Image (cartoon, rainbow, N blue to C red; front, top):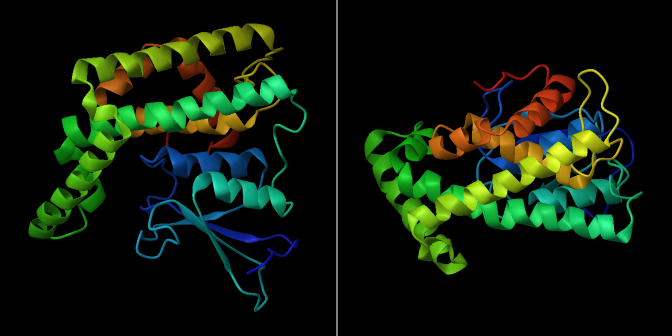
Length: 264
């Protein structure tokens, strides 16, 4: 499909799990949902499957014009999904009004979360809490199949973490890396809240502006993912120890996700 029609689209976000009204463990799923909600763009959710995904991974979305026979576009990869929706006029560019320096800052913050913290948390989930992770992802399978598929997934994740470099560090070093990143974001949010004109229980934003930048959807998604994922207890404890992170997430949740179950 060369282009997506400009009329109001029907968007379905495939999250790997149905669980309507709840956050899922993947930060990349919540990143897309947050970005859609920032734009007040309606969407539906469904489980989907990596077998049906264009790139073999969750999340992915389908987009079609309602009440027509127009073909459906299937998009994969959270960053590419958001860019395609911007190209086709369904999402505004949240960074359009930023200076070049601010845009570079925003990009660096997203990379710190998606290219660093993500792998440190994957290590915690798959190496340190493997059985919880296996039960969550493959719990719908018969137990013998859970064991087999879980082992294959574990080996794949281990190879990825070693090639990417994370598992070449000790568990203690990886834990320290995670803490440093969350500590840095908490400090940024403290400054941003002080800088921005925050009224009542309104959200405040990572770069201190009057509205979100692209990095806000990523940060919020990682906070939510951490707070709901039972396979990352150490990360949960870290995040819960930073008041600014919790305040930031609480405000966004109340404004944009009032229909979703709150994390405990």
